Every structure is written in structure tokens, then in C-alpha cells.
Image: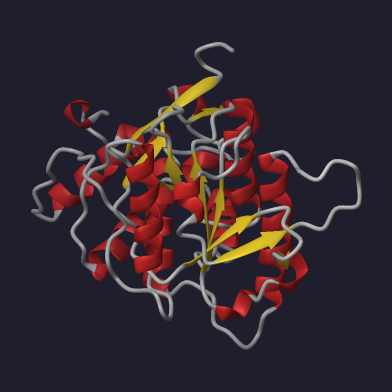
Length: 309
């Protein structure tokens, strides 16, 4: 695998923006001026189907094609957040498998010291925010996938390493075991295939659910819209610094401090995730997905040389 095929994940380094909804809304409108109408329409269509009611946690998944395929599946079925523990196995993505999906997701790395402590922190963080933890197992006493109650509350699906599955430390935190019914001699699936089947079924049922409000609130959608806009153009960070400077707001250097999306679902607390937000360390030619038009050249012309990123 070449260096451009295996993409590492690095801490997000983005210009901090004051936590003021009015200012963030103005910034969204400003950045939208440098994006084509076609791209804006696509962003809004995808955003309308995003959910945080279901999230995914990955424990030491080490094969690059599996790591990439799971992220692509999350994006395809509208799951916004993915939590990663990679203390033993460096989590990398393959750009030809992931197809740029990682940059549209919110990824969080949970660290130790050590893998056992990292998975404990990950599970505790999710539970503190009101998620129930679900894990797949071939055990016939487990809940069949089609019987999982999606209206019972937000759920985090945990998947383990390819050879060994979830560790005992992870299983100790699981609230409910689920199984995918199988009738063949082989009673297990590849981890990325398992994730795809489960997410397809649960997200479809979630969207058919009418008695429970599982949508994100307007503030959450605006924050995701802002992140997507800034990642949609080569000069996004420079444009943001210019926007802030024009309003007399000092823009500190981009940081990589642990952060979390402001999840605000019913029954989910406001405590921060313990994970550090991370992004794919993409070469500039791979930073946008192939199916979307880029029109930020005009914005680049309006950014001074000293503001270039």
C-alpha cells in the first residue's frame, strides 16, 4: 500500500470560533458564498438525514480496508459520530475504500494509557451521555437484530478487532448483546460487513420511527454545517480568520485540544466526550470528495498572502 493510500488520522487543527450561535450562523452564511449552489444543496440534503441517536465505537480495528469501509458505511447511512480506540493498532484509512467519507464524520480518539484504559474511557464517556452499549455476538440468547428496540434510547454499537472481537474489558460495559441470524456453516461475518448490515437495518427503522424524536436540534445541525463548509474548500481556515478579523475578533492559532460535538438529545447529558476530535491527514488533492464541485477560487483571491494556510 502506497503512502497516499494509507491515511493516518491526526488531531483536528481548526481555528477556534466563539460559541455564539448568531456569530456561527453569520459565518455559515459567509462561507456559503464561496461554495457552489450544487454543493450547498448536496450538503443540506445529507445533513437532513444525519443522526446521533446511533453512534459507532471501534476497538482496535487494524485492517485498513475494514477501518475505511466502516467509516464509509457510517456516512452512507447517516451516522455522524465514530469513536476510535487504537492504542495497540494504529487506525488508518484507505482513501480508495473510504472515498472521502471520513472528513464528513465527527471522529473521536479515546486514549489510555493502554488499550484497557482507553476502552474504559470510551465506554464510560458514551454511557455518561446517555448511550446504551450494544455488541454483536453469536450467542443464541442474544437479541435478534430485527428485535432491537430503536426507540428505547440512543445506542452505541461497539465493534472489535478482526481476529479476537471485543475484549473482555469492552464486553464488561455492554448493556445488550445482539445477533445477526445466520443459517450457514460459518457463524461469523467480517467486521465491516457486520457493521453495514446492522447500521442499514437500525437506521432504516429509526427513520420509520414516528413516536420518538431522534433528530438533531437546529444548533447541532448548524455546527455540523459549519464544519462541513470549512472542510469543503482549500482556504476555509483563512476565510474564517478573515471573517473574525473583520469583526474585531482575535483568532488564536488553530488548536487540537480535546473537544466534542454538542450532542443534545433527550436523555443525553451535556458532559464532554473524553475523546480527542481527529481528522484524516489527507494530501490536499484528496481533501474533497470526487462527486462535488469546488468553487472556492474567488474566496482564495480575497484572502491575503499572510492568511494562506
